[in-house]
Image (cartoon, rainbow, N blue to C red):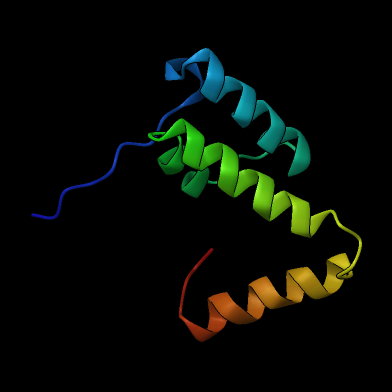
Amino acid sequence: MMERIELIEYDQASPEVKESLDFIQDASGGHVMNVFKVLANQPKVLEGVSDLIFGVYRSGEVDIQLTELAYLYTSTLYKCHY
């Protein structure tokens, strides 16, 4: 059986992780994807990855519709059902 990495839910999170999850929830329109809950096992990694992702996403240099299209294309290409 394959081991699973624990998803850190908000009510289980440390204050440091809650701060990052609050940021992610605000930046993503109220939803925290499971990938961030996995990264919450390592708070500094969660903070760095979320800063990177939302920094690019919100930079305004790439149109949001193109960003969403890239997500859709990539998930289709790799047969990810996100």
